[in-house]
Amino acid sequence: MIQTTASEPAAAAISDTRAVLLHAAAKEIHQHGFKAASIATILQDTGLTKGALYHHFPSKQQLGLAVVDEVIATDLAARMLDPLRRSVDGLDVLLAYMDWRITAMTDADVRLGCPLNNLVQEMSHEDPEFRARLDHILQDWQAAIAQVLREGQQQGRILSTVDVDASALFIVSAWEGCWGMAKIRQSAETFRLCMAQLKLYVLGLMPR
Amino acid sequence: MIQTTASEPAAAAISDTRAVLLHAAAKEIHQHGFKAASIATILQDTGLTKGALYHHFPSKQQLGLAVVDEVIATDLAARMLDPLRRSVDGLDVLLAYMDWRITAMTDADVRLGCPLNNLVQEMSHEDPEFRARLDHILQDWQAAIAQVLREGQQQGRILSTVDVDASALFIVSAWEGCWGMAKIRQSAETFRLCMAQLKLYVLGLMPR
DNA sequence: GGGAACATTCATACCGGTTGGTATGTTCCT
DNA sequence: AGGAACATACCAACCGGTATGAATGTTCCC
Image (cartoon, rainbow over all chains, first blue to last red; front, side, top):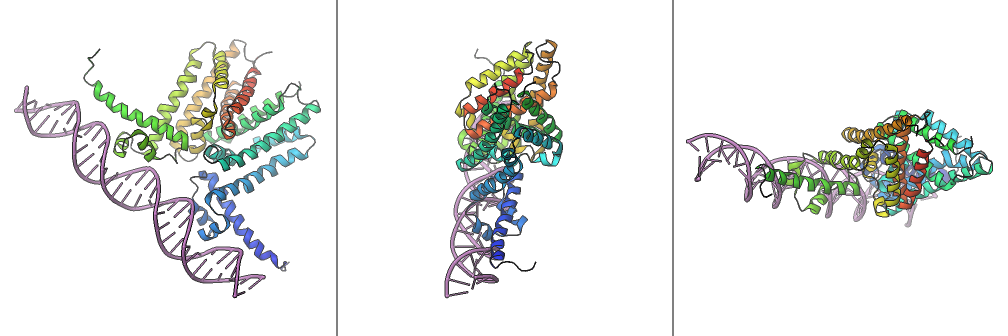
């Protein structure tokens, strides 16, 4: 397995440093927000230099936008949106995912808060480009949940009186609200309590 | 009414500049967050100088903490907590306040987000002093709502099966979540939709 | 009551440190 | 040879914070 195709090493080298920078930036941004994220720290963590960074990304803003598109959005899609969209019983997938979040969440996870929510609060009114991309992610999320609720209505598992769009909006909002409350309490237990109430709200959308 | 006590004029002069600085700082922090808040901008807005500021506040952090205690906490108490605590029909006060928020909220209000929530997301994991004071405000808020729900139970207006503490936690969380979602959409209409769903949640706690 | 002694209140000027960004190499692969 | 992929060195701007000093009261003793 020593042999590789000729083009692989170079290509791997290119995307490798890019990916390394991207994930180091994601970590730094998660810890300190975008504005306070230090280029110097990212370079220290990776052992790379400014030349390398500004070769792959034309500016700090573009680096941040790449983190949003290629790290945050990708992660959320892989964990939630794709499973929700693929399943015929999306409602079960949603409830199961909430259960998994409730049980698996740790104090360490909760400490820095939700990477998506953090950027939303920090950037959405300061930078239109950030706002557009972050909003796009949340729109996708909301749409996926609305679709799940709509299918649930067709299956008779969701009350026909429910406004699925407004309800999906609220679920996403409250979800991020749970992250926020858990963050200030620095407590996964707070997240669990809060998320359990959100689950009760969803169950309340179903017939008795 | 020309006569005043001897100590008043001096005291008024002192607290005047302090109050001016405090509210200019609150505005600047609301716009850019605490870390990115510029002392220079605050001084430009007020026409004062660094000497004046650092006479009244020993550091930028202490200025920020004063904003939390003396502006944000005070406003929330005056608008919500005091009316909630004073009324014997707290539930009606709560629902009326939600209605007022739903109707009176404008795009301009929503643009910068909730001052409290912004600081929570930005500072709670970076600065323990900020975290403690912000959490204290939210604890008070949650406790006030829990008390309202508890009294509602005694009056038979809230289902006895409701966990008032968890429910109050969720209400506060979702409330801030509505702010966040409205902020990224830059839309008061989003806030209205979201808040209306939260109101439905509260109404769901009451007997049919 | 008058004036010395002191405290408050604010302005001016400046500091060290850090920031994002750039201009110029150097290496290495095709 | 030529260009992609990086490293090195550097810059102008800005940040929060401080040192100094000038007014402006306030207190208190003679």
